Image 1: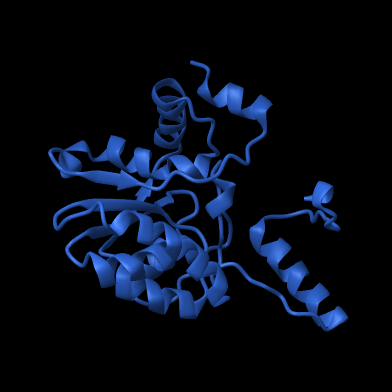
Image 2 (image 1 turned 90 degrees about the vertical axis):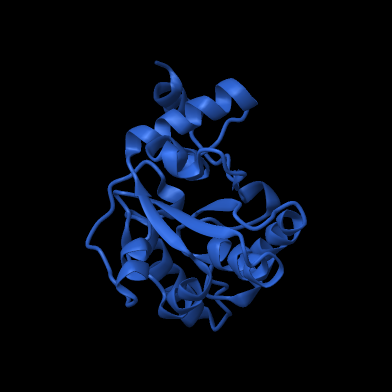
Length: 208
């Protein structure tokens, strides 16, 4: 980020603490805060992935999407429901950061006091109400996966696809590992995006 000229401020805390600090800076400086998942442009950007997928999918196929703030899931989900309505959209979140999945299941915003997952790219605690409203329209299911399955998913992506991914990008693989019977015999797609990972920590995760 700095190499592209950005001023980067680090905060002591999780994603929600960083979001609160960003909002405070925006208010102080009188500038627009572009918030992932809340600003429609971020959802529209993610939706272009759905445009790439729609033509290759048919009724009965399933798409597994990592669920964090919700931009990826709602953007892709809206496109698929419009262009390939018979495709099942399944969102996947870590068991240690379940806020938006719990909210989807309860059909109301559910917050958590803390998160405990290596998948920090999806580790929010306070779902955005408008995002939940969108998610309820497009997600057919939302599932939670264990940390061990996420690590195994990362290892499999390295071994069989040559991909170094961050934990959040392996959530779809983790979902298949935890419930193989559900996906057996089906055309399954998972969106693998994100390589923002500390390599030293990554090696510890994927080395048996």
